[in-house]
Image (cartoon, rainbow, N blue to C red):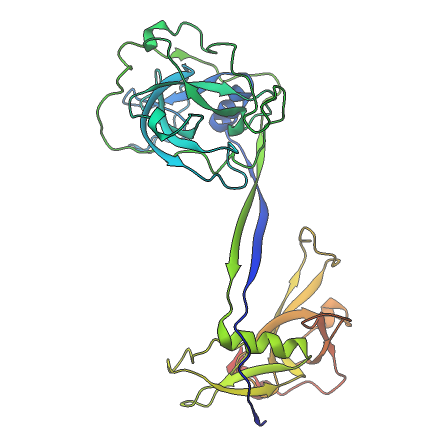
Length: 371
């Protein structure tokens, strides 16, 4: 096919990748999150006597299973911090705050969370802080709304595991009783470190962590945490030309000047030869199914009934298969070598799916190099 000229302006667009991450909880994590709902912070004691908060199910040094739960304090000491001047969507506070690692009284490791402070000058390593509980708690890390500065003396003065009754406030709205969010239940957990370090400043003064059975009424057994990534996608000039052609219901690839292969979608360079590809070539619109899979799990927000078929399709004139959905044929009749054509919806910038053309199946030798 003849080359195509034209260099449209490079495109860019905001994109969002988002999905809910659902996981079940074992006995240790279940007890930890259920405890937060009940204003109780639990850790786990390792075989060498250290207390880890957040708790883990296996000793990070020996890999032995550990279930010795203990209750630690709701006050603690900042071990390190970083100021966040511009909070992003889904973070614990809507106003500037400090990310802090807090070693709770009775613990030997630090918990990552937010500290509600007036400014960076109000934060320092070694400062004392306490938990501010969310007004409504559901069994998630966000049941700790944040930490706040605490001027009440050393850890030895902590006699109740739940701390002060004050501060049970949602930092987002300034009102008590606002619901806590689940979105941070995974992201805010601190990594667990097994390397040796100096003892906690208040560990010796604090009461010994009290043993805890980990048993609560109506325990939390699973969590769903939304994972979201907001970013700006810039496809570059090669893919901008490809997208502009799709808007005209044409498919454009680029030919390598060395090996002469035509790549669709184009990337601006030949992945085999490593040289720039500037020669645009129109391919298709028909193509051949080279391989396929049957999808049996329905995706959220996707209005397609299962089962359906996604396939690699080698468009006529292309040396690289693209992937697309196959329609207009029962899923169990889709096969390698099936000849297909694009189906467009009104106003669409890309084919909705591909359907059989009615042509005889392509010979295997004609597409075997594209599988």
